Length: 65
Image (cartoon, rainbow, N blue to C red; front, side):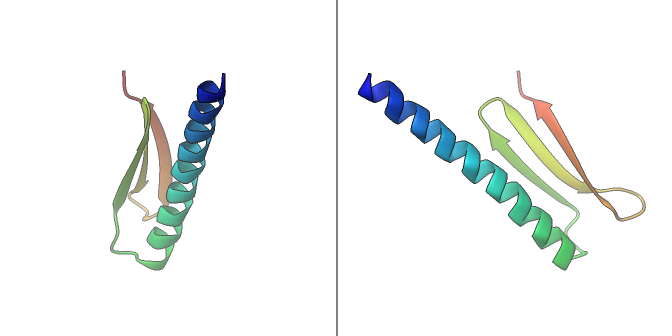
């Protein structure tokens, strides 16, 4: 039972870090217009931050099955 709780806590911590990294990357892209794309992965999904034709930052999340 304790191991399940520890595993759940590790997953929760990893997911929080994933979200934190995405928003940190977004802030980096705001401050650095030369940065065109960033990728972040968590378990079976990937989030891509990418600039479009008008140089606006877009978020896309994909399943990695």
